[in-house]
Image (tube, rainbow, N blue to C red; front, side, top):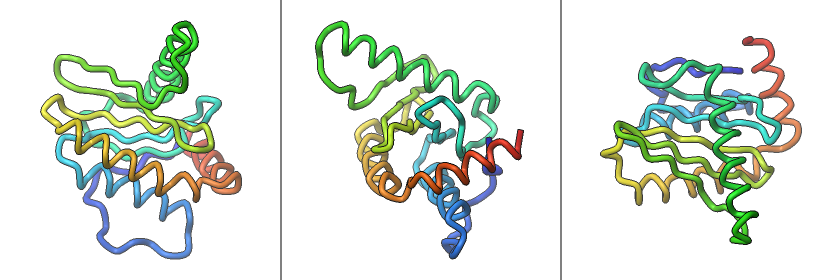
Length: 153
């Protein structure tokens, strides 16, 4: 798993390295939305590929199983109730919320934020991010992110 250090996102987008560009997009998302303290991309098979977080975020080893488990519960509930596709899974807690959405390749985007975060803005921005990264999350980039994640472990 590759974790982006909790530092201010560079304003200039890195050029030429697709992994750094992808990480930059996640870091900008996390730093630009008030209340967001964790953004993670988890592969369809449950591997944490990339993450942007601050000190409030849980340990890296917890992000992937929590994200995958929450998504699996949502899928199971939808199937049980014959409700169709799951668009978003939201877990509301006393001090934070966790929102999980599926990216076009089957991977998962998880965003954790403070309870005071505007959910409409968060949902809108997550939809924009998924549309933005969905087409660039090629098998080659996923493989490279997976390699970086394995090297970081």
